[in-house]
Length: 116
Length: 115
Image 1 (cartoon, chains in turn green, red):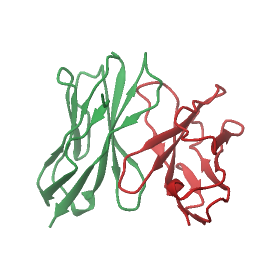
Image 2 (cartoon, each protein chain N blue to C red):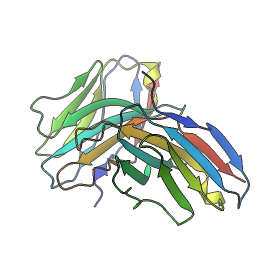
Image 3 (spheres, each protein chain N blue to C red):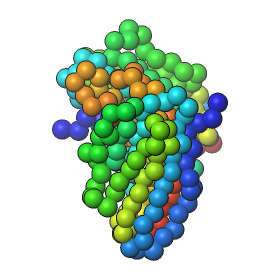
Image 4 (cartoon, rainbow over the protein chains, first blue to last red):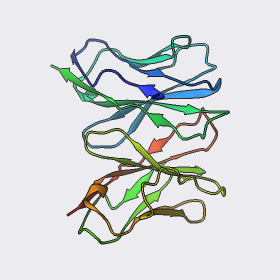
């Protein structure tokens, strides 16, 4: 079974609107971290936001927030007030702690296109 | 402070030649990772270094691939007898090294083209 699943290969959003990118994960490890990265056409992977499995509150970083639903094993990224510069590939990743190898597993990514 | 740097940014080589890709991690980061990303694909883990521990080589696709990390800092990924299927972007990342909560920071990558 895939550890990280991103079911949306492509998403489109109008500038200034909010968009949610889906990510579900699979682990039996009680200690894990969830990460979102942005990869623009330049190719560099840019860290956006982190959520720990023991965190009580959803993580937020500026226009990015992580909708963490632990029981459903989902960690969706919400981008508010989309900008043209948000057009990129977005990758969800998980790193398992106690029982894992500490090597993050990445999803296949979601391509986001922001329309003016 | 300086981020992760990689060199060269682009490398074009002929099939059968050896190539070396370099990664300079963020100062103080004990963990270093190499990934490969083929066109339009996700990230494929290659190798992981953590401090002075033996590296995790479980992702290396063949014995033509090897990597070393000197002095716990700079790392070199070597691909011997390159094949066309080795063409990809090779990404390096580093992190502080603590488990689960640790954030990886990536370099800009090296785009390898094997003719």
